[in-house]
Length: 98
Image (tube, rainbow, N blue to C red):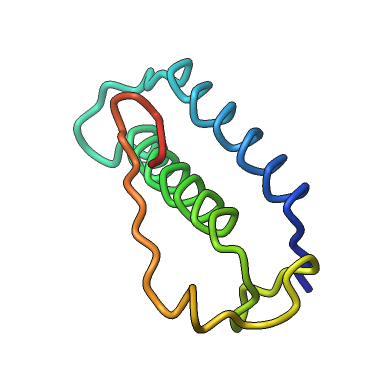
């Protein structure tokens, strides 16, 4: 089970943002054009980091519990303020989430 609180989500945001910034140190050394798993895995990692960053930033911003997004510090749904979608943008060049 996943137990979310403001503190754990804030820590998660900090850690994922640090991890995203460290992606700049990743280099592809295999230069082959056929079956280049080094390149494929690097592209997959870049994609997964962006998805992880937007997911945790959006989860931290939502101050309610809803379905699988259950928070210990907000036990109830808040349909008045949160009956809406969450939109997030990940800037691949800067490694930032807004």
